[in-house]
Length: 212
Image (tube, rainbow, N blue to C red):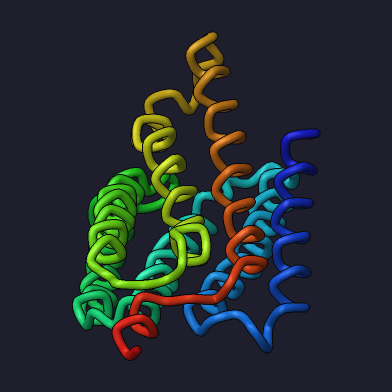
């Protein structure tokens, strides 16, 4: 229970910080603020459903593609690469096909999660490559998306195996299952804490630097 409380507190605190900074944070960060809110609501709903003895996997079938779309939109606003926009309808279509035909309820949508993690590994690396090409007087730590990209990479590295094999370990309670569970907890803490840092630093974007 304590891991869940810490998780909810991080999400809530991040949303409060982002809300107070709403007028000054970048358009990209506004997307990630929305993601914090949707994540917070989804986790509370999923917990409530599970507490009532029902499967909460439907929450993640809905939440995962929404999360992916918001992240793609956030990176688009920072980098202004239209590929991120073009990927959104593709992601929606793939999500629907997988959730209806390949891994419908009561299965956890691990195939789509793995696809997400593939994207969430490539996109931050692409961001790092782009920011290295920018001539700017600011340091990397002055770009909000730098922090979020770092958190996202850590999250993906920790979870691509954990959530990709979720269905396999679902009914087990081995020491490996316990270890993987705590890896998932702490990677969530790191990832969503990176949003808080992103809201507090200077709000530079790659597209702004190209315009100078």
